[in-house]
Figure 1 (cartoon, rainbow, N blue to C red):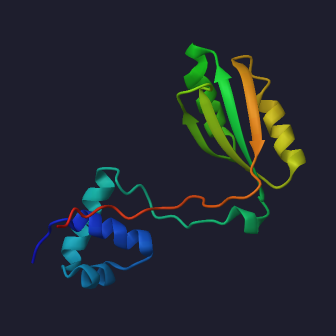
Figure 2: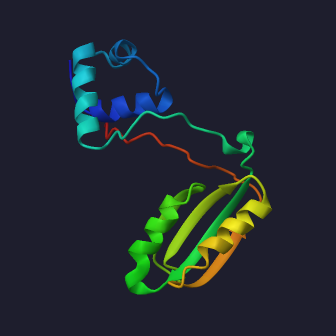
Length: 153
């Protein structure tokens, strides 16, 4: 029995089925339930696995307007602005980036009026120097996970 790449195989199995039981994971990976449990605990303790959550289709819940906000921020205010954006309920992603803008934030909204109101509220922050907002016409792929390389030869 080899444990080479077991953590990557375990993560890949969970990406396919996050609700898999320890027993089914053990059977699939040809290891004991105790081994699976120990490796999962280690992956959780290391922060590799941060939780087990459903993958939600926001469009089906009525959040079918997606906005991409690009913001230029006063340099020293960057941490404050990103924390405020992170706290906004409908901001699903916030990134500090290189390039012409300092921050990119992705928001999900039920309609353009709600989007407009929230964006206008965000833009009242004096530390935001410039903004550019795009509305997504079609999400070709979104929130996709990918299997880890197993480095098998």
